[in-house]
Structure formats: structure tokens, C-alpha cells
Image 1: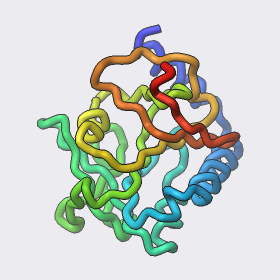
Image 2 (image 1 turned 60 degrees about the vertical axis):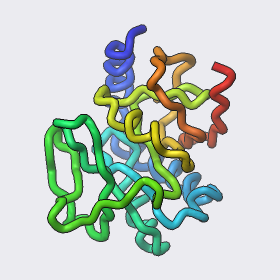
Image 3 (image 1 turned 90 degrees about the vertical axis):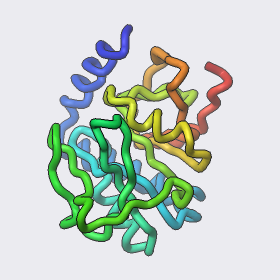
Image 4 (image 1 turned 30 degrees about the horizontal axis):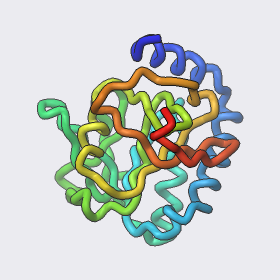
Length: 191
């Protein structure tokens, strides 16, 4: 199955999640994240601001603030097909951009260098147990992660796990995947 067909299939599967199941699964995933050593030790966490049907990250951002963590969120630069991360201290520092995405308002947030990020929670539509991921098609995270050596993890519903993904040389795996059922320690060498 090619990447575009896989994206359509996963989106269709996620679209049938009812609101109550979505909330419960997101809560279970967040609890698994908060129990991780990587989360507990991180001072700066990079995370996207979710839209349904992605795992709810709003509650994770709130918890990060409660714990005194520095939360940074991506701002895409489409002309360069790149992105920067900006420190977010309030949801009012967000704006709605293309495709209904929430991104930081550059004029009221500051850019944080990747070297200061202790943990990046990498988004995606589908994941294999080896850590391979299928993103939303822009390649933004693959380009950003190419020069990041820190800890990575992905938050996903079990419906997003697949046996195998189409893989290209620039595709970079995540180190852990957290679902509502388990924490997967990824072993990229096995794929």
C-alpha cells in the first residue's frame, strides 16, 4: 500500500472513534506519558497542538505547565518546508492557520533552539512497532529531526499501529510509541 492510500485508510479508521472513546484513550495515553522517565526528566518538551482525531495534546500541555515544564510548539514555514518551535505559555498565544492547525503567534512567542529540547513528541498518522512513522505528508518533522539527537516518542491510538510502512531514506524512526494499551520500545534495526 502506498503512503497516500495508507493515510486515507488511517484517517477513515480514526474518524469512527466516538468522542467518549477518543477522550478515554487520550487520557490513558497521557497517563502513560506522565509515567515515563523521559517525561519526568524533561525540562523542555516539544509537542504539537492537536486537532481531532489526533491524540489530545491539550491536556498534556496543561499538565506540562502544572509541572513547570517549558512547552514548545511548532510553527511551520511552508516556503522553506521547515519549522521552528516557539515557547507556549498560554493557549491565547495560538492562532489558527492553514488546515485548521493551531500554531504559535510569532509576535508573542519566542523561538527555542532544538538543542534545548529534552523530549520531542512526534506526530504521525501511522506507526510500526519499529518506530517508523507515516506523517501527514509535508516532511516537516523528518527534516527537523535529521539534526536532533535527543529523545523522541509518539502518541498514537492502537488503530494507528500497522505491520509495515512504506519507507524512504529520509524517514526517521521514533524511539517509543505510547498507545492507550501499551508503551512500545522501538527497535528500528529489526525492520
